[in-house]
Image (tube, rainbow, N blue to C red; front, side):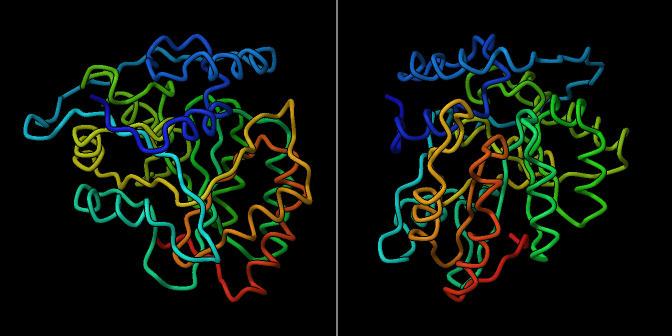
Length: 289
C-alpha cells in the first residue's frame, strides 16, 4: 500500500510544475487524470527541451532504505500555529537530509518553483530587490536552458537556485539510474554553464521514498519540501488577488517554507503585500534552511 499524506492536494498543487512535461508517462498517482487535465491546458505555452545526456551514472547503494511512496501535500496552519504534518515528517525524515519546516522561530523561507517561464519572474525579482528579500528558486533544466538571463540575474542578486530535476520525472517511479540522472544532469549543466553549484533539491510533485531521499543525500543534496502552498499553479485560472493574499498571510507560521509558483500573475502582483504583511506579523525572511 502506498503511504499517502493528503495526496489529492499535492497532486493538484504541483500540476503547474508538470505543465511542461505532459508527455511524461511516469506518474501513476491515483489523481493522474486530474493532473493530465491541468497539463493539457498549458501544453500550448511551450514544449520540453530534452537534452542528450552524457552523464555517467555510477549508482548509489540504497538497498537498506524503503521504496514506499510518500506523497506530500501540506495541511493548513490554524491561528498561525505550526502545521502538524510537516513537523511530523521533519522528525521522520530529517536524518535523510529532508526539510519540510524550519526551526520554531519567526522566520519564513520564500521559495518559487520554476518549471517554465510565464513572463512574471522579472517582476518577482524586482519586488524581491525592492523589499530586500532573498528567495530560493527551484528550477528545472528546461527553465535554466531557456532563460539564462534570469538565471544570471538570480545569481547576481543573491538568490539561491535549487535543483528541481532534469525532466521532472517522479523520482520514486523510475530506475535508480534515471533518478540519479534527474539530479546529476542539471547539476552538471549549472556548473558548466553558470559556474554555479546547487545543493538543494525539490522533488517533482512532492513524491518521494526513503530510497530517493537517501539518493539525493548521497549526491550532496538536501531535499527541501514546504509547509505551506496554495492553488496558484493554473495560469489559465488565476486566483483572485485579495483571496490569495488572505490565504497566504492567514497561514504564516514559525519556520514556514512557503511554496509559490512563479507562473502565477497573482503571485507577482501581491508579492510585495505578502512580504509587508508577513513583516507586520513579526516574521523575517531567510534562505538559511
